[in-house]
Image 1: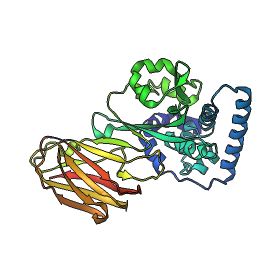
Image 2 (image 1 turned 180 degrees about the horizontal axis):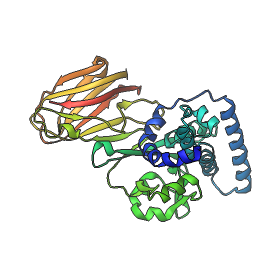
Image 3 (image 1 turned 45 degrees about the horizontal axis):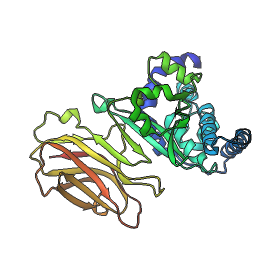
Image 4 (image 1 turned 135 degrees about the vertical axis):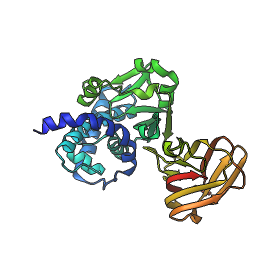
Length: 348
């Protein structure tokens, strides 16, 4: 019975997995690394890496470890298993340990597992978050992979599909994958026998659509700029324009002191002209820093400590013109955490 339910629910889960995976990666709990499931995973991976390194002495040890870890997670933190649990209305994993114990997880939880298991394997890693822009904000979606640093460069691994890209016998970064465009497909080394991969292909979907998707934003170690488009419900309004992150990060600034991580900035696209009121609905703040609201060479700064939960109305000292508006966080020195969590921004 579960198998039949599972087949009916899979098309829905295809969409949910693609939409929610990055949000889950950022929200999933990181457990005590001494849990039995975590300890067993580390022990098995170390044994594999040691064995393969001895048998392939000319192969970079960190490449071996990264592929072993990717393969381990693809086998043991399965989106297919996640869909079975969801179809049966069973509890879904919400932490790394639960993912490893249940054998289930979607893209975001797979990456969360990779990042945590990489630590005892002594791999230098960072997430690569990919945000796709739909025809409307409600059609936005996302995917997430990782990069591992070795051979003096970052190397991209798509944990969900068991994929890395190899050009002239060298793995390459996600930036190089994007730069090469469609020809990167010839460089993809992918586990094409994975059942979830096969299901996506049968459904007519492209697992590697990020290679040449035209409208995407990318965060490397959470650093980069996210473009926010106006809510269609206010598109015809002459009084205000609303901008909400939809399947996108809901914070601005720096939320990790990992040296390979950076700050998230946002750009409000196609803002209306002749407005001066900036209203941000704040869910919370952490740390210190200045929110910088800028258009061209005009800007205003606001201490994030002064922002309260709920609506914060800021009168801009300049009148907006047609175009875009950037919102960044100027961090204090020495480097420390500082970010604003928000639900929407309204220009009036």
